[in-house]
Amino acid sequence: MSDVSETELMLKGYGLTTAQLFYRMPDYQNVLNTFVWQEYDLAPDHPKLFEFIEFWQDSIEGPLHSVQYTHRKMLASGEWQQLVGEFTLH
Image (cartoon, rainbow, N blue to C red):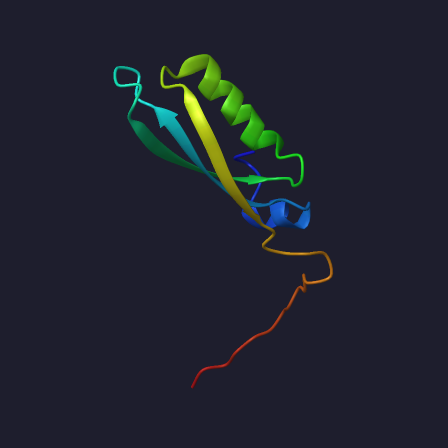
């Protein structure tokens, strides 16, 4: 997705998803730590978020306790306008 601009993603319906993952420290199971993840994703299914959670569960030693997330659609269809203009400065 790195070759696609943020504007193109927004026009395709993507919004910014921010997740705060709470996980237990591998050596201190009673200690919770947090990790913040942010990516353009599609609501309501959030495939990128669930892909990251799967990666975490498969690759990271700290077991997940919980995940809180928010999703903000930055641009809705009908809000996009292409403006072309020129300013002359003296």
